[in-house]
Image (cartoon, helix red, strand yellow):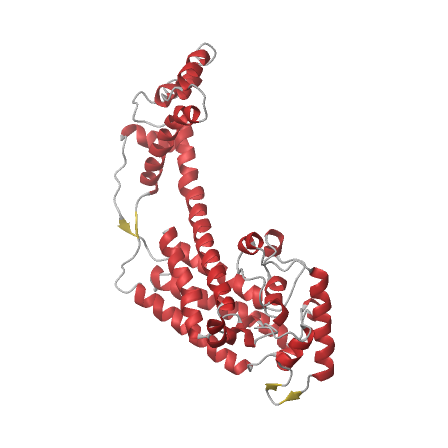
Length: 381
């Protein structure tokens, strides 16, 4: 592959870089629209999957709470929750369509052009070697001279003359042509490293924004009472109730975080499809109420259903604010670390629920009085 690219560059040192409209992924819908509606479609599918597990009582041994506790402890009916979830997705799609209104199809350039531009950067980076050596107290010029006898190419690199160092390996005579190594590294950068960096930046933006705005909603009593408390009416989480929240929280905590992430990371519509869909699956997983031993996300990150469910308990409200990673919780000391204490509190809740909880239609009888008892009589905001 690299040799073919080298041959094409040998005939023209600079490929013609022309932006052209990208064909839509799905013929009958634009990528901009698909990036907006796909996370909602994923939400319906993933939420529906876990709802079926609940209805048919499958994998009950992996549930965090007994299924009947959804009715005994939650302070909102499932119908009310569903209405809030529908409102959230209507807001999300409407805002997305408004922000993308008038945008044409994404404009993209030929891959050869991107690789050529990246190869130019790859070639210029080694020229920084003497600068970095001098910055740490090493005399680059002297080191280059002492190395010349054993390796002329290495001496050129240390001295900041990378282009001369590659002349011996260049397949073409023109100094404007790139080596196979430069082209291969440029291709990896364009197709792998750059997208990974974009996704990483988007993740950092979303994770940081949600952690601090979420924590603010718990620190500020007014915000908690009038806005965030709506989400915490659900003590026993279930998948399709993941985004049940006050409309202000939906707007400023969730939707705005992804708008900022997409802009800062410069995600393309297709990258937004993947990032938004993955984030949706993660949110559903955090609220599904199941802890599976084969959960692939759990292999890389402790922030999962068990982590977030603890935050939904009255005694865990001041802990586990993060949504995607545990970085900020660990750094700022808000990770719940007392695993044994959590188990005792969970068991106490189950005992009290089985003794006190009864059903009266669709309204939960077990309320914050039980939670205060578990917390030792201390009122938890």
